[in-house]
Image 1 (cartoon, rainbow, N blue to C red):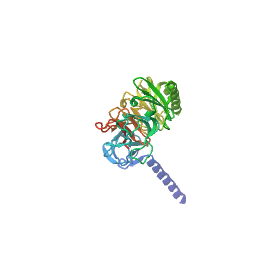
Image 2: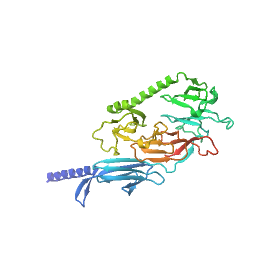
Image 3: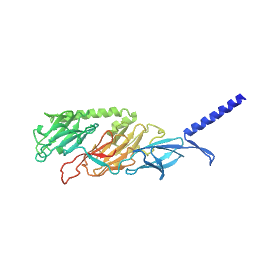
Image 4: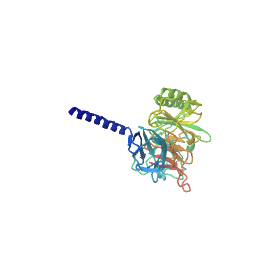
Length: 402
């Protein structure tokens, strides 16, 4: 009898264990149909939190939220009052977990001034939280302001309302008068130095400047500028190749020969690039990873088009439709989370998911279209003149998008 009880207990334990495992893997018992069918899970998070989740148009709750659903195709929408909305079509399979993380942006972003000097030019010091700004006013307008080049440190915490600008080069230390608005700047690979070329109607000069201290006696490199810039470009290319070498070998070979590398994401797991010639991108992970991004990808690459390649999932997405004709740092930048791109089309600044979905306008007010910048914590900085009738000069402003 004891053996029978133990046997019954053993089989009961196995049955319960099997049910627990089946439940954990997404299987559900339908008493009406008397069937045991597999389900999938959609895991939803958002920034900001407590955004409303709609499944095929029906409200299901707020983020963060897990939905257990039968296999099917669904439209997921995430909305919050005062913010942009986000949506994605997914195909859910049994025993599959699809994780979706939506980032929403304020519909009416606030503006906070960062400088009050009046700037004629601003250039972001790439891969740092610094901005090189140019101040140049006629002496009669503002005697207490010194014309020159200054460094604004966006990531530096200060107690003053307007953080102090770090002087790099004062105009009085230049032998000639130059138009700062037309200055050309090239940064060294370590961003500790810069070559600044000034021009006027009769001449031009290039100076090698330290970005770590004031340059009271700027070093003229007009004759050696091209050689120095060539050496810097070679070092930058080598630095990019070191990152590229962490990608799959087949991708490295094709990228080295046929890609114009524009920018790696901050996490260095995604690559924004332009194609030099028509080609097919081979599959590296075949079959694709379970639970990978379901947005349709493009592996038939067209010359001059822009793409994002994700090395973790071996996915490739075309984003040319979202990008203006120019492709420099003034038109497109990676957002700090490596999941989005910021795009400047000259009239507005928008954000798009790295796979080319969910384009959202985050700023369409007045701004100088040749400058915008994002910091390491997701802040957007623009150059704008909000009162042009009373003021000739723009300043840096923080746009409250996060």
